[in-house]
Image 1 (cartoon, one colour):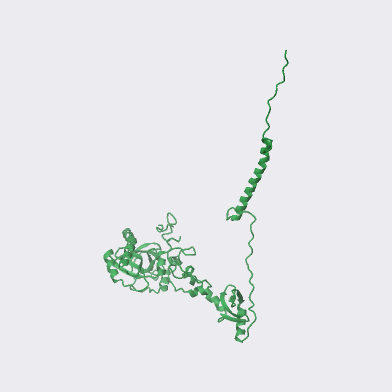
Image 2 (cartoon, helix red, strand yellow):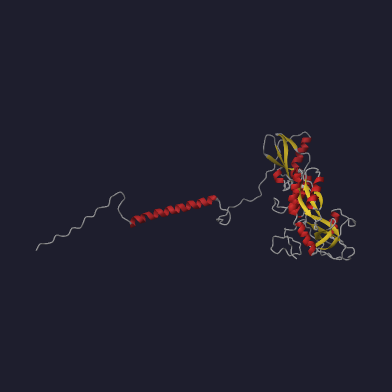
Length: 408
């Protein structure tokens, strides 16, 4: 069995439906307990994690059948007054860890059940209803625009049997969509469900490539979206540039929180209440903190130069200021560049980039050689041609006179 949604290789990844090439690895979780032997079958986890709509939505279902399912299998589960088709994403003991992470109890009586392994008929009906989704998005957006509702339909997800449709929308405030549901029910002839999502959830459903050159974290592995503010950028000494700090969703990038804890731990060694220190030249204001070199950069008034100070020096100046003593100098640290100087190569790099100066030099050299060749050819042509000088007319040759003949 090969992965049908993998477009990188012609025949799919051939890994039993679980593609690890990045194309259909959306919100995937590695089952590191897959080879763990089960001592007792009765105590094993009978709950299976099932993903829908290419991994954009996941849910837990109880397996009361005698069949054993593996990752990548298509199964039919209970839906709203019908059935739905999903793909098995996790099985075994790791499902319990995922349920504990999402605060889902294994003894929940409202948990839906797995019906059977998806048959050919189930898959055919599921694909027919999935083909209706693009037209449903276009029509639902047109209806919402006609009703003048301030909302955006982001995605429409059809149930496998075609009896229910979930409309995911984005709105800044509360939307009264009671009239909208009536129009949708009469237009699509199915049960409607409206679900509001945020900008980050929409970006996760759409997907894309981030500024780092890789797939978006929200579209591959990130499931919990935490709030991100500009304080995370300030702690990391990043420039507050909205265009650079914002992601494709228009919000601050989630990756700003990845290294924030490391920066906060490193900043604990820096002294507090040292934003301003006084010296003879005036009050120096703190500009930034360098956690890699353990330096604090200050700037004096009426000067644009920044002075790096060690943590010990800042603490000493602060203690002197509290005693009423004002030191004369900051005693900044002299920084030396640790990078070695780049040595220019002595050979001509014909494969890499060639500067315009080298091209101009080669052109001048070629012109000089052509000029020298012309000058060498001129005297040779003069020797082979007429030896007469320029400006003088050629001499006129007189006819030869015959010698006089003697008379007989």
